[in-house]
Length: 327
Image 1 (cartoon, helix red, strand yellow):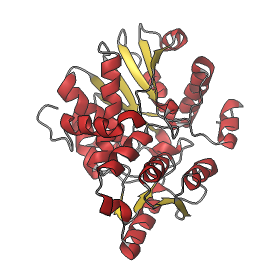
Image 2 (tube, rainbow, N blue to C red; image 1 turned 30 degrees about the horizontal axis):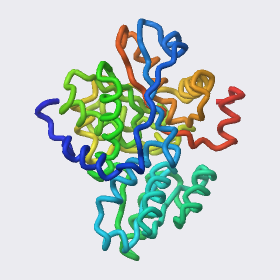
Image 3 (cartoon, helix red, strand yellow; image 1 turned 45 degrees about the vertical axis):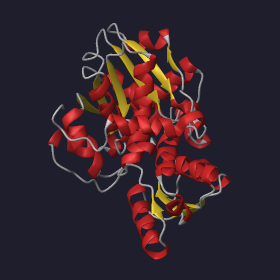
């Protein structure tokens, strides 16, 4: 994708890393023999533990990168975001560090533990709309009525740069890595990774995986045109989007080596495997990378492949359903 315009450059990722500084030290990149065995085909699996971040997900990078780039005046007007939880937690955590007010919009029935976490960080949480995309409409309405600064989960160059710091760390921790398999909701981590790969390792292959029940970006990628879906139905709430996004869709089309869709059953099985092997907490979206790797294992034969446990913020009821095999 050497000729394709990316929304950010490597200098933006490096600047974001400088702003993250000591607040977000590098997360571990670990290998597990049992995951290599499960993948087979001579694949060596590397696991990036973003579930160890202060907010329990990689979105702490995105939130702090975006909020820290704003002027003090913009922060003082108040931050507004829409989320299924992890982006909101990242924005709320960053806002608290700067003493800025934050309003976070979530759909009705959102993960109650994520909602509680955002409120505990001092954010005002508004529950309205049937899904993430309707929550974004609520956020826009609040912005028009009260002012403030939108921190979009995807359509924000600083958010993408924050996500890119994760790929930068992976390449520094394991320069020999051949491929990344990354979960795609809005696409910030995949486009961040494509930016880093172009500058630091053009041969690095980046693959995407989305939930089959929320496959708008996956289907759009294969059709090479924007497809919006009427619903996003998956227990992996971090992937539950109904459309691709302006800043990330074209780079995903140009840069991803392949893009697969995993069923909820496949994601749940990968989650159970990660729980058994890593003994760390994993949410649905956090298991999607492994689910995608297993679907792509023939293409990834004999490669060193990094996946990301993007988050740990699964609520108790959903975790119990996964553990008992109800998903």
